[in-house]
Image (cartoon, rainbow, N blue to C red; front, side, top):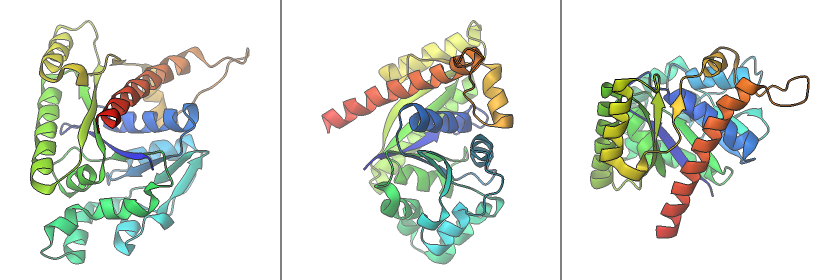
Length: 272
């Protein structure tokens, strides 16, 4: 049985969805692992990117219907070999109402519902990635309690570091009060200006605070990653049969991130 990963930070716009979709792509295509992405964000950005990636023109199945019916199994959309998606939709903005209707006055069942829904399908996958809105909410509560590991995306800005610290503190609150079994697998530094004074300062602060949890691989700004948001993730070959230079550069970074996270995961498994 594989593990479930929530990608987090309580600051928006730091690259969480990009990280989810790229890690899932490398997991499925490069590592040949059976991978599932569950999009818990009503904005559906991960859904949009992966639909374009798999040339899926229309997705009828969605997370809202899965939460309403009590089963995610019938809401899985294949994207391509080894990669599946449970899509989000705007109706999922009513998650709080849905949970209250299903489990009135039972907070434990409300915040553990996603974990219960994932349980029957978890054995079908090597890796499950959760994309979540950057808020303290029913979305983050359900995702954290359903996940085995948390991966934090840290854009090297002061507010992003604050968001990461708040995220870790809130994660610890859930561990202490709701018996969540969740560990920080790694902190991925994303730098817009690798030579910028602020970026370097924030990265140094993160390393002082979290030591080896901060990955050595740094995700730097790449125009090709922005292109993937528009037309889907690609790995094109040139006329010589080699992977396009800019695609290779973009993918190599996230392959390295995935390798580092796997090393951290093996460490946790050996200790347990």
